Length: 206
Image 1 (cartoon, rainbow, N blue to C red):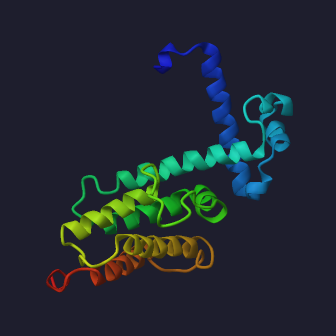
Image 2 (image 1 turned 120 degrees about the horizontal axis):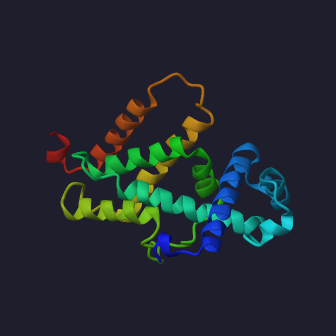
């Protein structure tokens, strides 16, 4: 349904939900996931707790909604990473992941520090709506097109790339948050070093 066709009541409800989720993000930044409580949200938004329960039954429902929104945002971020660029797609995806980690630190921690993966084994296919599926697809394309060695396992390559950029994102925002270095240049050099190690020899010498 087009927004212009929604009833005033529905529009108000969506605006209220958005306000609740926005304030929940602020609370999470201040106090972590456990700090996101219905009573504190109600106090900050000048609502009664009973009024908020009409929108979200409890703490877990708010966190789940924020996680789903964050996953969708990261998916979009990665899906657009290789548009209008001549970069190696794997390099572009790695840098896009790092930009997300830097620009959305609360969502980054929510997704990858506190919440487990819904995929529980390599035997299960990666969900097509997951950000990881974009990375895995890019790796499979690189193998098929001969841009990286054909005998490399795509899952292993995707996991290695993901592990590297995730570790970079965590280090930059925690242990190295006061470190004086050009992180963008350092990350790009590290990513290139890894990606070049997967290329066939004739491509690696280009």
